[in-house]
Structures are given as C-alpha cells and as structure tokens.
Length: 188
Image 1 (tube, one colour):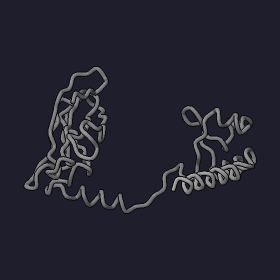
Image 2 (image 1 turned 30 degrees about the vertical axis):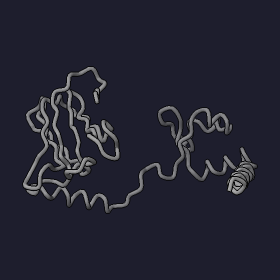
Image 3 (image 1 turned 45 degrees about the horizontal axis):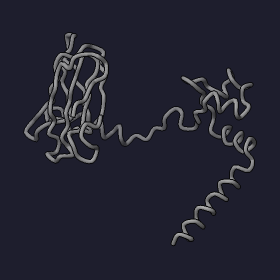
Image 4 (image 1 turned 180 degrees about the vertical axis):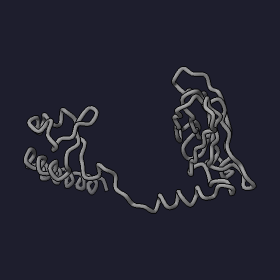
C-alpha cells in the first residue's frame, strides 16, 4: 500500500513498531517536516489505517521508538530543528519503557479522573438549523455561542425549542417505530 502525508513535504523518517507481536499490533511510523503519522500494518483496523497524527512545532528530521528489555514502547523520540529532543508518549502503542515508568502512572491517573468536557451540556446547531428553528434573534447573545460554522446552545433550551417547533415529532417517530416492528414481524 502507498500512503501519503498529503502536505507536499518529503518523508524524513520511517520506523516500524512491533507492538505486541500480533498482526493487529504492528505499526508503521512515518514523519515529514510537519507531522508524524502512525499507520496500521494489518489487523482489525486494516492495512494503512491512520491511527494517530502528531503535529510538532519544529521540523522533524528523524524518529525512533524507545525500547527496553520488553521490546518497543509507546515513547517516541524525535530529532528536530531545535536544541531539545522531542518526546511523545502514545499509550496505545505500548507501555512506557521501564526507565520512565512514571508515564504509565500519570496516564492511569488521568484516565481515572472523570471530568466532563466544557460543552457536554450544549448542542451544536448550524446556521441553517438556527433559521429553521426561528432563533435568529438569539444570535450574539449568551444563549447562542458562536463556534466555527454554527453555534453552541444549551441542551435544555434546544430540547424546548425543538418540542415547540415540531410538536408532533415524537408521534411521528413512534409511528415509524411501530411500522418498522410490523414489517419485521410480517417478514418472519
């Protein structure tokens, strides 16, 4: 398979990661001046599936995977156009080397912390949806927070507006579900 970085820069380094030794754990790491890409070499994801992209601030010249007695780890070291070596820990690739096992401890602590994201209670609505729901008068207020090509609005407000704009939506949904169940029973 031929894979491209799609940013018109030459590939500066390629590394192979053996993972857990199975075909699903094998990876290819390739870097150019802007990004390091992790690709699958087979398994459930399929050959050539992109697993991760790491964008760096400095131009990457070389890339290596840190190893120890257990084999390849999840720690990537990169020589770049700066005085320090860049290091990135990717837990999905494997455990940290034994000489820096504190990275696994930090990762476990971060996984244990259940912190909601900032926009958990918000619904993204496009400009077309705002017009469809007749909410143009709320643009520019704290009730519609502008974001890229649309807005974030409180989920409770969105549900209220939806129920007012489409009062029979639930009944239509319920009828569609009943029809689907009847079709399944008729086929059996």
